[in-house]
Amino acid sequence: MAMPGGRAGRLVFPIMLLIPPIMMLAPALALALAALAPTAVIIWATAATAFTLLWWGMVYRLALKMPTAYALTFPVGAAVLLYIALAAIVRGSRVRWKEREYLSS
Image 1 (cartoon, rainbow, N blue to C red):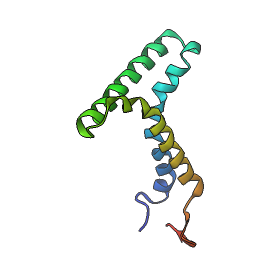
Image 2: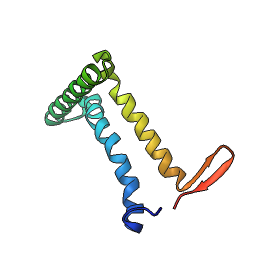
Image 3: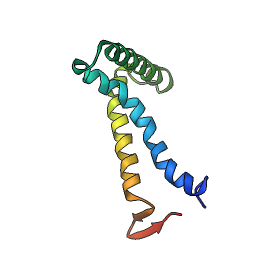
């Protein structure tokens, strides 16, 4: 099966794969670096991080029936997702599994 969008799809898809984890990490990273940032960035980072924590708290509480404190781990999950996406991009189209090699198109 070919990549949707052909050559353009093969170029754009890896970049699109990185956007969700980067967007999830941006507020937390900006908040962590708040001492070096102007006030507007601090306000944005605080608000964005608070809304993200609230969102994940609701997901854990209402959808997953788990403690809302787990929402505090969302940056860890985003970092792991970013690592997986980067590893997939670096690996390329060649996959090795159970002593077999596969080549995706």
